[in-house]
Length: 156
Image (tube, rainbow, N blue to C red; front, top):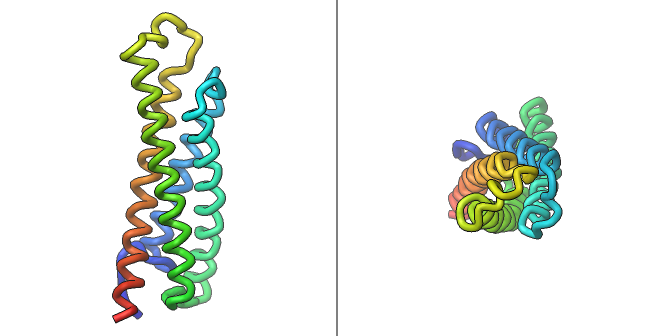
């Protein structure tokens, strides 16, 4: 069995999945508790993408915990392809959602000064949500990269 840090079925992989889950949950909570986020499609897309990431991360957390408890080897090519495809698709969607939401948050805060003119907007929560979504993406990119690295090294 190859030893790649952050690969499925390892403690490092579980730590990355839990980090993704916590950041996605925090981002979704911050966005959901903010006033008027549904007026901006980028923020709605971010909430949708964080919900998908929560579901995906929770499923993989459960699989990793079961794998660690039963010493189930997840490092077969069939299992890794599922991880790689799911991680890369969700990572691209999460990056798109975080980037577009960052653009809208910057527009509201600095470009058109909506946050100062309309103080009822929850601009600080928008920023926290975007920061946590970007962190969730970075953890997902790390786990997707390590899984892809493991898949390529097993194909040799």
